[in-house]
Length: 86
Image 1 (cartoon, helix red, strand yellow):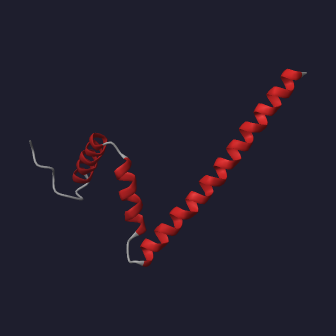
Image 2 (tube, rainbow, N blue to C red):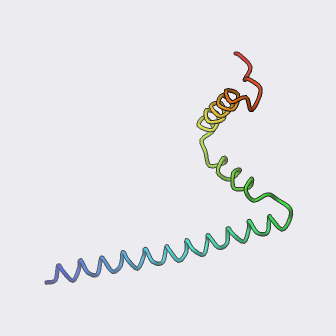
Image 3 (cartoon, helix red, strand yellow):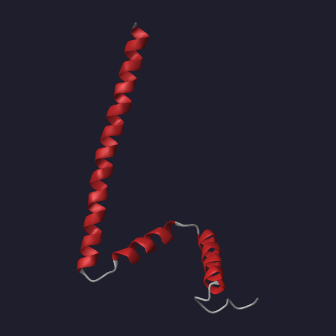
């Protein structure tokens, strides 16, 4: 029976920690929304800001590879000039 009590206490502690973190996550998300709203109020395009944040999270080499593939696809679709041959 004591083992059941310990397991129950552990489970309850895990759940409470998760709940606290979820509350903190919601508060941070609200703070981020406020920052984007402030940026928008100052004339910045929030879609572009979100893209910049996403790009800055990426590894430099990964980003360069994705940009090269994007350029290739756009060129193949006639949406931009062909990339220069190396």
